[in-house]
Image (cartoon, rainbow, N blue to C red; front, top):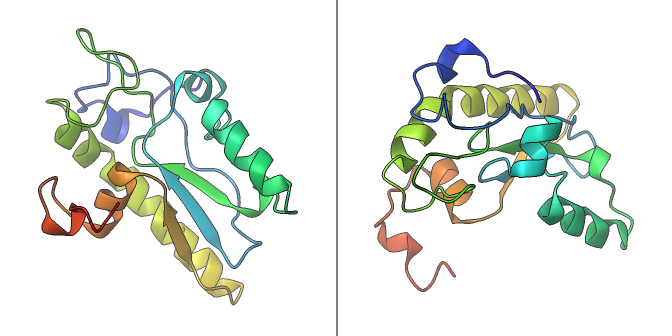
Length: 157
């Protein structure tokens, strides 16, 4: 398990309870510079310090591998760089919790830096940077939308 950095993590509501630290990984060099962005680390990811290595990641990349797309070609990141876990809430709970907005806001500098580094790396290599947001939390964060934004109505799903 990787230790969380003090900056910005020490000011996060999840600092004591949230588990592990999972920094962004991969170069995104193949597949036109795609960064896959998820919600947060799960139990396996927090323990390993590697994003998307648990059940969901295994399923996703197994399916992509079936058509010849390899994990190594992507930049992989999460909105939260740790596993959200707080006393009184089930592990991995983020959506709809009272700490959702605060945790996302505290972790934003890490994600913003990762996205900027991804964009710069892609531009250097002549690739078009793409952020593929998987899930509503990741989509809202990238688009800067609030929970009740009309764009997230029935048409989004």
